[in-house]
Length: 165
Image (tube, rainbow, N blue to C red; front, side, top):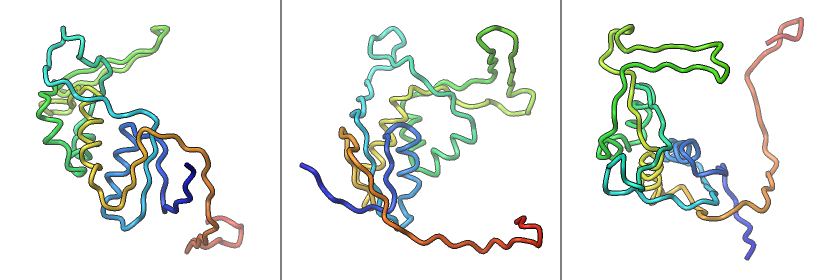
């Protein structure tokens, strides 16, 4: 069944970024839609690396990312999964010709951030947006067509005599 619905913002993709955007716009007064083709995987209760239910897809969240998760009011839920903090990180390219090293000690901090299973983050975000009043979830679903409505955009930018802003 095809529906004609109007939204101020349509977010296509319910991953970490899409759900974070939806959550951050909770108090915006905008009418939101989030469309994602994949249902959110459940978070296993057991946190055992040897368990087949352990998700090897992880994110290294920095302290700045932690502050974003706190603002989205999901950090406490993420902490329930007992994330592992990290103090050092080295990243290198495929050919081994370049690398970069980060250390919490170098910046006089106790940690750089936390390593967290992606599905833990997704679960916390999904739960947070579940009852969000300005958000209509289409999950699992797919986008068939998107028809933008004409709108007016204005700017207070001024050009100088050479046409520069």
